[in-house]
Length: 299
Image (tube, rainbow, N blue to C red):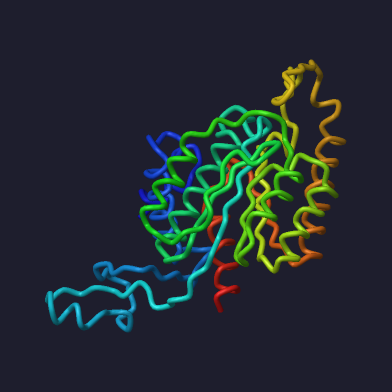
């Protein structure tokens, strides 16, 4: 069990060969750990059967299959409600950043997007993907075909973050293209003009979409603990600056905290789910938030 749960750790997932393998093992590791603290009692059902395991509830046994095979299988899907979901991932150059010992923000975001897609498809939901920097780089509208997942995962595998950030403008254009009501999942560091981002999010809400915002940051972007001397390079312009981080650590950390708190407040005022994750955190934090949101929408 613990062996599967290791695939929730970003540094382990990053060593896997391709996005499909990453997504599958993240989801399987997540399912394995659902009954453990802090998610005790949390459950999810899927569109398939699996062999009975000690600890499974007997009420979920499929007796028809037992009658045919003389083996015990658990029904894993009963709710036929389908959801349309578009995962939007920031692929601008700022997402390339990774402090020592951590994966880049983009690698984290892409792995999370892949795992969410895998999870959606297993629940017979329609999944789509959009990638952006200053403009929309790629857009795959939501579909429910299992074979479509391969296309989404291949796209996530092939993208290299580049160019400047234009979150607000890209979200505005995506709001025009995503006309059918559904769930919008946005994964970004949101390093852009906050009020312009909020304005773009409001467009999705005006179209009656449900929204989850995942703000992905590197741990050092949150605490600025870089040591005595450091050289900082702008990921988008290449400009460099040498400074002593400890001198500005307190004011920087305070400014970042205020920025994230303001984004959280703006989201919650508009009934948008906001989740702050950093690249040191296992993926189950975000996956549980998604499943909670899906359950609210479907229920």
